[in-house]
Image 1 (cartoon, rainbow, N blue to C red):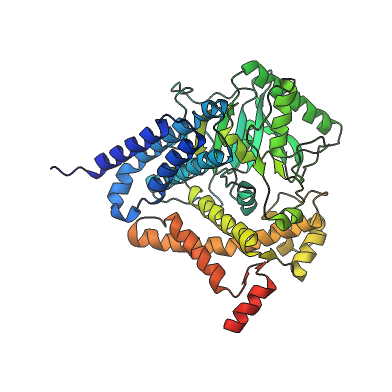
Image 2 (image 1 turned 90 degrees about the vertical axis):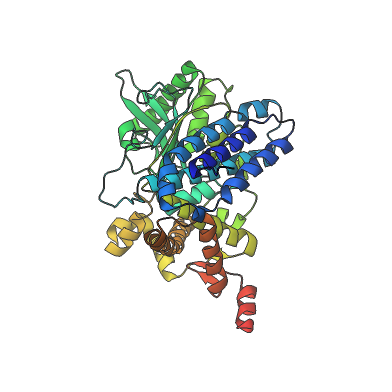
Length: 468
């Protein structure tokens, strides 16, 4: 029997995954079972069996086919929901599988780009630009021409800071996105973005500026009714503009509550826009994020909601069509590692009872952070690493927690990035995500009950001291 080539083998395996994605289902259990098989097959794929030349050759195929596979899965969510099959476990199965497939695509893109990493001085790529497999367009919207934004389009994006990873990882299911916003096209054809930012509250910014603001990844969504979408954009633009013109900007809402409030967070702004435009007919999201664990951390950052609309909920929103995905492969390894770090930090808090512990320096920064421009250059630099500026209504504990999160995560990221550089230099291939997670587990077990500002319960440290 003639041995098939690596390319033929991959094509065969991708075809098998697509068959699973397209398979008829009769229950939520069928969805979970099929997607679990896809997840396991991709997750357990051994990169070491492929030569560097194989990886380079296969990268474009993997990126294209995994995007098509993600779309095949996502396109079925509306049908599954209409049939009552999208229970909590099925929702998680869909999101977990989409997340893993996107990581696999990212790694292929990194190979294709020669493991390039953006420096601080390099210009940003513009999101949804047509550059070497950065943009993938859903076949229903692919006209062969650059994407034309419409009023009411919704942007789901991810930044490169640790607090973006924390937002993406908050809640009962991991996400890869940290911010949502709505596009408004004015009468002169100029594009704007209406959004709610932690630092500034609700603001209006040029679309070009937002798309070039050092994003790592982005998804563009579109409501099926162009009229409803345009009205949503018009209403929320007018509402936010009126507040800015009056000198009374709408503050950011750290509580994440969806009920009536004079404050907004990013995805709530999108929710209100479509609800008002449709007179309540369009209720986002269909599937909510729940905050049923890690209560001490949520309390520290000022979050009081038990269920809300996290930005990542848009990823499987059946009321919106996915138009296109974009990613900058110079950043995708970094944010993948940040995601894993944040997942582990949250796991240590939720499962093992670790907690953030402030010291004098953190308390000083937190208390005086709002006056950071008058403090020393080192404090200014530290604060600027997390925020453009600290909003005056940010709680002291929130400031302290975000600084501690940054300072705990950054050394871990630097070590993982070093490990990856060594691996690429020696073997021409990246770290497998499994290796990153194993390294982080080792860090927790070998650091005497403290990693950065995260500290194990006293009883655990006492036990460790006795055994040592």
